[in-house]
Length: 307
Image 1 (cartoon, helix red, strand yellow):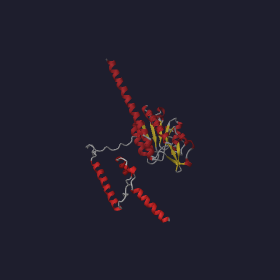
Image 2 (cartoon, one colour; image 1 turned 90 degrees about the vertical axis):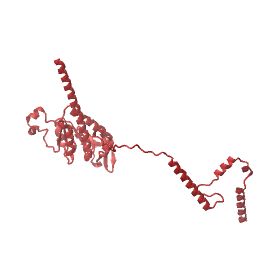
Image 3 (cartoon, helix red, strand yellow; image 1 turned 135 degrees about the vertical axis):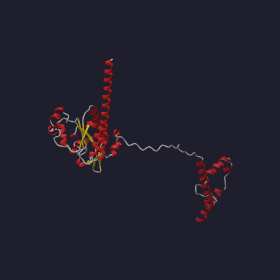
Image 4 (cartoon, one colour; image 1 turned 45 degrees about the horizontal axis):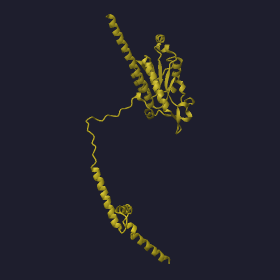
């Protein structure tokens, strides 16, 4: 009984699917098209009464037709051809030290500090966080400090002050002498500090420079202040302001104007001393320009007085 009832049910369903109803015959042609579209099989499927081989050939022809229409559409698109120029490609400009940004400081490795266990307690305000056991310096503070310090160097040189640059590590010599060339007669470079240069000046320079105070610089820049504490003490005793690149293992209060950065990186030191020296070069240019203007005014005044 179960087998006969199942076969009867299948016959009933087949007849229902094949035989259209009177309601379906009464519909309009548009409704018939919609019904045919909804009854259309998906991609890769066969129509009712269609063999697998016929369905495969039909789908292959549809795919070929779609590719043909796509290629025809692409061929109609206009091709953009840029205008040919005989000018050679311009090289990418290197960033100037006066345009120090967070990216240049980060690329120079200025944010990398020493181990957490070596971090000075007074250095905590300049710490951004800790990573892989190292203290990370907050460059958001370093950048404005560097710019303010550069403005200080510019003003000192503009007032015809003397800037002394001290760097005693291997690799500092080239960069500090390059900075001294920018400052010309307003800058001096030292690669080996002799104790007593400031506190015992009469032994080195005699009495005449002592009377004129020409031995005394107006500002001293230290690239590695942690290794020149004796020189910093002499500057403090003579009331000379100091600038220093201070790392995380050093108390930033040892210098007057600390610049929080990685003192071990030569790229960082070159970037900072380049920024400061170019600022001093700008101050020297402004001073000479002002001197020329005053000389011209005095010359014109003398000509008017003669008349």
